[in-house]
Amino acid sequence: MRAAVEKQLRAAVAAAASLTDKRFGLLVASSVVATSAIVASAMTGAGDSGALAALIGRSLASDSTPVASAPAPGAPPGAGPSAASQGGPEPAAGGPLATAPVAAPAASGPVSAPAAKKPATSSEPEAGPVKHVFVISLTSPGYEQSLGAQSQMPYLSATLRPQGELLSNYSLLDGAALPNGIAAIGGQPPNPATAAGCPGYEELTGAKANSRGVLGGAGCVYPVETLTLADQLTSGQLTWRAYVEGMVDAAGKPANCVHPDPGEPSTASQPSGYAASQNPFAYFHSLLDLGDCSSNDVPIEGLAGDLRKAEKTPSYSFIAPTPCDAGTAGQCAPGAPEGAAAADAFLSAWVPKILASPAYKADGVLIVTFSAANPPAPELPAAADPLRTGALVISPFATPGGADATPYTPYSLLRSTEELFGLEPLAMAADPKTRSFAAGLLEENSGD
Image (cartoon, rainbow, N blue to C red; front, side):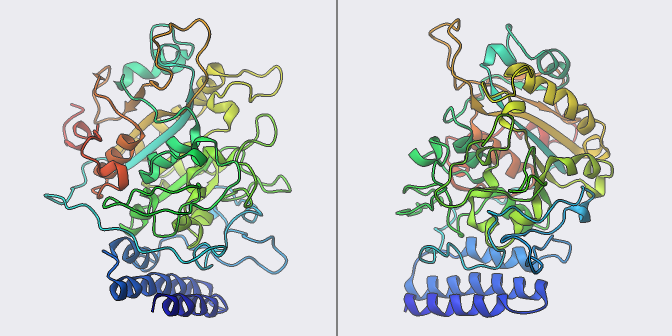
């Protein structure tokens, strides 16, 4: 029975993709994908279909949701739509590696199994006063060298630190960027492939979700039913964008949702260049296959324009520099500032624009976090934990100069963001051991 449903699913998607009305084709295709999977789940008794049902709601919820369209004749495969509709510069067609927006899930493998049941909760989460979340993801030189007494980042430690609340025990799950990024937007734990930076951009295989939707298996490109914070936001008629520095296509032109071809590495191809490992949204079929990545994963040049008006600023903005500007050792051009100095310069260029934006001033929060750690410097004490990076939360609703010594991780970043928007926690964000730092930001007068 399952094989028959899968065959019909692929045929229906292929038919939908041939429709001339592109939006209608995407809606039909995404609805067929989700509905067929739900039917298959019911026939096989394979658990709750809520996650896949969300894929229907995501495409049908709002006409204002950005929709990917098929490339124009002669455009490279995977060409994405322009970012101009939300105020950023119009990028070139999506990179040569982008996935077709109406393609069947994971064309190189079988249709993914339905998602596991969501964990039961005692009450539905409620959104608080924060309506705009900005996350900047950097590489840590070590806690003491960034936010501590030996800081090599004066803008972060001396200018921004007094304005916000320090999360002094924020720690990474792994030293590499990709597993922490995936955990921060999808709640999925590191595995050998993600910890290695996804050296072959391979599909996750042998994966079976547990009761919280946590996947095991090997690989780093997650199946279509594995949802992310971005999926949750779109299903809730909220907006999101990832602003990624240095993201260009094979011709060197700005492009959306650029990721490797299967078998290719995710690392930067040249000094100071784009690295897909800094861009976790490009590793989820839920975003690749239905066009959300092509629409909302954009070059950083669009951020300045989107900040000018609150109505153009997404509810959630994820800001990822190149490895050089993030502070990764050995990734900058000869003679350019590198390491902590490069990361601090990136902050000093972009944070004032965010803090001056109408969206931030009205109801925003900026989270300066780290998704990777440079190898410990030889002069560091042996007891120093290279995965302890700290993080900083700045908001009209946060306590200036405050500190929170609770242990947090990238799962906490996901859970806290979900709580701010009134969303259910995903995967490891739903684990009882995962702490949230959203409580103070959920109170209307917490910043008074």
